[in-house]
Length: 221
Image (cartoon, rainbow, N blue to C red; front, side, top):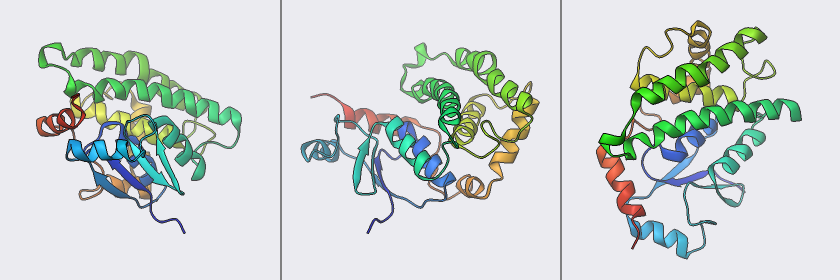
């Protein structure tokens, strides 16, 4: 008998947050174990739990899964958030890769030395490279969702990306009316709405303490 998925990671967003989002969107309850010491991390490696000595680690359906994209693919397919056919899956993949690139810039932002941080570049990329693509796709299709007129992983990922950028620049959607409507609609899907409420397993924006903890755990001997 399989219990709830178990997520092992730091007590913060990082590469695990998109996994939390996708499970929550699918209405799946999950447990979490937080890495707080380097000894915990080293034990996982010693026990062979981490295929490439890296987290995130998700224990699901009797597997110990690593590599963020593989985990997300599995969850999306398992819970019918990965399109109806191969073509829809290809479009979902393309849209997800775009939002992954954008969110990657934000995920690494707080780990970058202050003098090297470039928030204007992130906002510029969001408003000229990424958001216009999604605005156009939704407008051209005249549909509520990015792919196949049904809720998918691509929609979940895009909402996560929008909210991450808005934390840094609240007016970032001012020139994207379709995305504004999309944000409101997806945010009100019951499972998403629940995840966005205070007290959920959604993690807050990284602070200095979180960054210091991650660096301490991952430091090389």
